Amino acid sequence: MTTRRSFLQTGLAGSAALAGLTACGGGGSSSSGGSSNGGGSGGGGGTTPPPTAPILVIVQIDGGNDWLSMAPPTAGANLTAYQGKRTTLRIDAANTTDLGSGIGLNKDLTGFDLLQAAGRVAWIPGIGMPNPNLSHFTAKDIWGYGAATPDGTGWLGRWADQVFSASDVLKGVVVESIPPIMLKGHAQSFVSITGSTGFVYPSYLLRTDALAAANTLATGWLQSLTATGTDPVSLAAYGACSASGKQFYDAQSQFNTLIKTRTPSVPYPGEAAYPVKTLAGGNLTAGLSNELKLIAQMIASDLPTQVYYARLGGWDTHSNQTTDHANLQRALGGAIKAFYDDLASITTANGNAQDRVLIATWSEFGRRVQENNGGTDHGTAALSFVVGKKVKGGLYGGYPNLADLDANGNMKHTTDFRSLYATLLERWLGQSATVTDQILGTNYTRLGFL
Image (cartoon, rainbow, N blue to C red):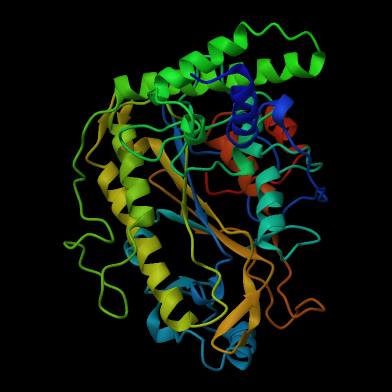
């Protein structure tokens, strides 16, 4: 049986990492605010009304994507500068699809030529932040905070604080085992579900306990509720662990009731039937495919989830970039395109799934323009793109001037990353302009893709 002391020790750690409760929270660093000079205007609603019960799927491109190999320049002064610094890694225009404005789309981003032709992709080149940081961990945290003045919570966690009730335990789901800071709120957060059989919260509660996970949770939070310690620190910790444990116990119970089996309607990367292979001829990595297939299964099961979070790692291409980056693009593009096509076969209580879903990507930074021994070093401005049936396709924000770099040889960002968040919160998730600005800490320019 889990003791009150052991539950306190493990439950408190779990609530800090998973539930994001104030009593178990942490600190944060600061970053400066500012408005984007990208497309669209500040405040107000877009011209594309969101569907009933919109769903946002966030895909993290983890490791720092060298997007100059994904959307390289194909004409003008940028091409000249690019070719001068990328003597072996540069992508020739013949291997791209024209995006317009002297920009090409690498054909290795599988399926995106079709999405682009259908007007389903919004591209945001040069997205970044004032005073960028080139540490993976710090940069991810800054992207996660998404605030003019970070306070240790994430922008989607603060959104959860605004819209989740105590019973909304499945409204935000991450299909990774450890939720990032982006999903941590003051009092609400997302739950981790990594397979169709549910999840265990947290697994280390079972170290000295032979009970099933659900029983362990039930016992643990009930013990915490009936704790008799009188010192304020213990009482606060008991309360945090109690709320955290109950949240995950209720989520597991609801998930087990709602989830239904499903077979995808199209092949995904990593499957033998998927026609695109790696450069070496093997099957592509199935990591993101499996996460998106699980999300499609949850959408088809009519879970009440509004935001899902997925991830594809491996993008820290300091070496062997020619092969590795091409294969990563094939896996990323193929998985998102398969997911988008798969959604068209799903009918939910609130309409066709493809009409309800918007996919938005982010990476913590781009790479340096100058190549380096078969790879690229950490850079600054990144590329985000948004995919959906409601998207107004095109380029939003300025492509950085590759002939006008900062003192370290890095690109200068052209769109503040919080403009993307403001657009998603207000024009897709339906927050008012006032609440959106409150969540982000100030007003950021809205982009025109919605």
